[in-house]
View 1 (spheres, protein in one colour):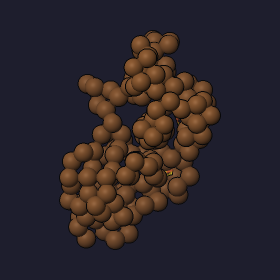
View 2 (cartoon, rainbow, N blue to C red):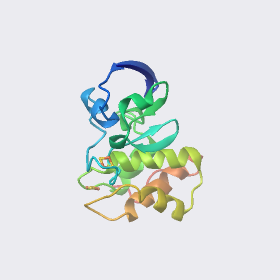
View 3 (tube, helix red, strand yellow):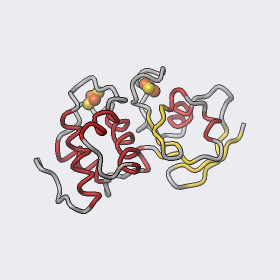
View 4 (cartoon, rainbow, N blue to C red):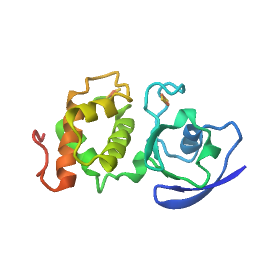
Length: 162
Ligand code: FES
Ligand code: FES
């Protein structure tokens, strides 16, 4: 079946199978930033933003995004122009293996779009939907707080650049 939707700001038309998940469709179209960690909706590595809300793409059928707006990590920033959340993760060393990092950043973006001045508890709650097997959540939470300051215009880069 054909689906039409907006992906990272561009209109796209894809042919997908009825049982194909959004995760499978995205990776089949080379959106490899969307990770497959569990395929069961438990780890958040496959998170994307659908109509402004973080969703685990492994538990959505691709056809469900017909007519909707999808944002993946590839649409948030790129190596030449990192999003402030990506820059903060980099500056604060908030990633180790990086497998969960796209999901964390996507989830953080959805939070900051909705709540520009989040409390530490709101950040921790948002990040708790992503399982990180390498590290804790202290540095990612600090990075999201730092990014929130930058996005509001009262931050001047990392607290602990390296
Ligand atoms: S791969 Fe989708 S939640 Fe784990
Ligand atoms: S940095 Fe490795 S799983 Fe989170």
